[in-house]
Length: 192
Image 1 (tube, one colour):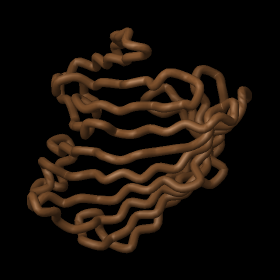
Image 2: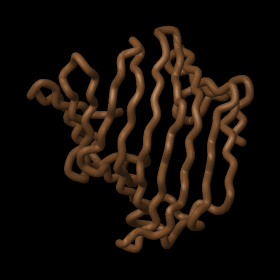
Image 3: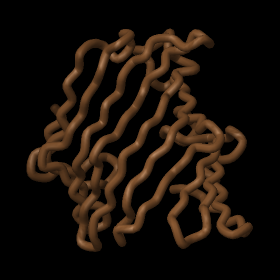
Image 4: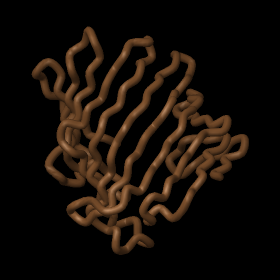
């Protein structure tokens, strides 16, 4: 149980309160182990705005794939974020392939993952949306930035009545540059 109490200012500047409770059936690295996480009265306060989070997050170790890499199903069920403007709800089904660093599982800084999958839900206005990873997302810890980064891959966000938004994470560099394409126009964003 991660217990943030009534108010905890974290290193990222976000104030958190409440609990994240995880039940493990075995070690993360053990085939068929399952980690199920839920929220207990959990809130994040970002830029003075309080967000209430709910849902269930289930990671299942599927053993080794044909490439010899550990891989995991990652399912999010009945998730929601509620704040003063309304509520966003979603579910997602992903697969994480642990492509590097699994032989040194006590050192998370050399881990690299390939992520595939989809999500769907309702936006703050109650309209449906879907997210589809169209090119596998490559995730790794970038020492130069001292943070986890999606360094390549792409996804599409569809919301009926609006143009599809394509998010392209680039060519593998640890540069925090993301290209967002809407109606054929590309917007370059540098994440902070």
